[in-house]
Length: 113
Length: 115
Image (cartoon, rainbow over all chains, first blue to last red; front, side, top):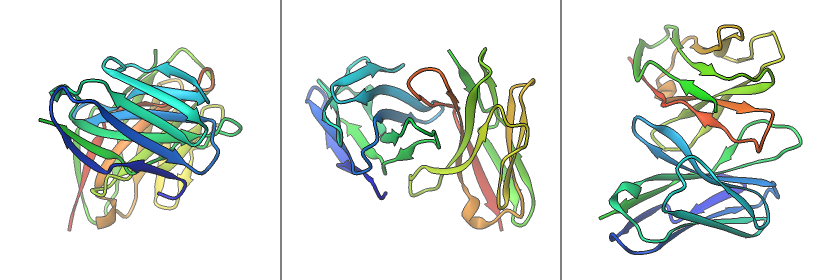
């Protein structure tokens, strides 16, 4: 969607390999988020960032790490992928001044085999 | 921690009819936002409607309206004159005005439109 892009859109990887998903925004928003979507669970927060180098854990952070070295980029890394991390991953951004909700990326479907 | 409950995993409605999707939430706070998001088969998450808790008036966006009952912690979405393009997953979400703007989502309701 305009202003936020995720890459890749699809990825298949093997168990035990590291994987990095990228989220890039052009809106200069302060807040960025990584969620995973699974049937029966909705969207669950993995990690979020409230500024450059400022990150915090969400409710399902085990097995994931993040980095934000620039305002526009937020990376999600699976250090050693497992089959339980097969999911659709969404990045989202928001601005703090007036909260109108998130703007979402188009999602990454990750399959760990 | 806040929780959001969508008790209807699936709903269906005849085209041109009206359907209501349910959402309840649990919070001890008084200042917050509620949202409905739509996710069509394209996977894109689309904001449908937004409600501020301190506003008594129910939000409306064209054919979409909400019934916000703050005391009951209920936030249902009504879709009038249902169209084929309304077929999607619908997620209810909560955001406190305290903290880092995180949204908490329900598990979703899959809406099917019957031609």
